Length: 120
Image (cartoon, rainbow, N blue to C red):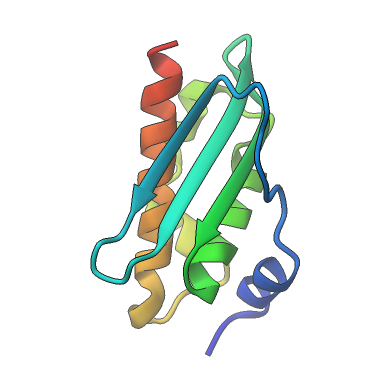
């Protein structure tokens, strides 16, 4: 049911935990399934230097959040707008229709984080 990439990120999530001194921290949720994602980042000179996540959700939600943090670390803020739910789903090896909401949650979190960082 899950791709090898989804299972790898679920079993060995990257960048999980709190981020003291974060430039911005956001929280998004999916009210339908109850998944919850918190993202925090430290930005230096328009670049994401450090990022962490906390997620309460399904296998795919945790995996997508983990992958998202790897995708955005070290990138310029302006480049983050190119990451979408669709590109996350492709990058994680594909998602079943019932789990596409996980990529959308990660995408929503990223949009909220970018907005919060732009306001800093």
